[in-house]
Length: 170
Image 1 (tube, rainbow, N blue to C red):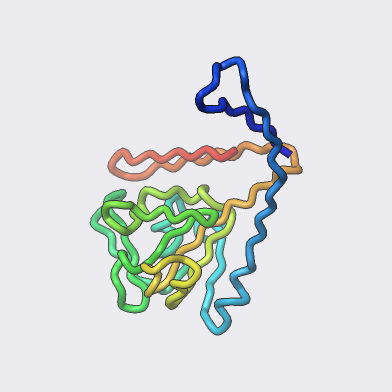
Image 2: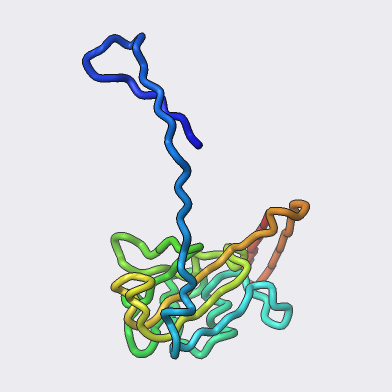
């Protein structure tokens, strides 16, 4: 239950009205019931066989999709089923993180530790993920272990041409 204190219009500030709002529970319907027949590929960023620091590197190493890269740490976009990057939605915990001005996501700017699990949804699921999801969707889920003791992970990479990358996850 939640209490809301609101001022009543037309009266002095001394007369406040207190209202108690009832609890509202919102349930989500599992998406697997509505994407029957669609292909999904599951992977995570902590695969020791394929260490990666960005979502672009994960998709390059673990999926057969075409990742268009314009240089190291520059714009990196996806092409699913022949569509452009603007026809692929990128969701982080159900929130669409495509740029509102460009309509696409730059996967070189999304760190690999942004999620615990990544799902690549092939094909249109526009009823679930938005009207731009004609080619597919990239779903980033960060479940987290909230009941466990907090843990800290740190990664440090050093490469040629004085390239250094650091990542910290809590």
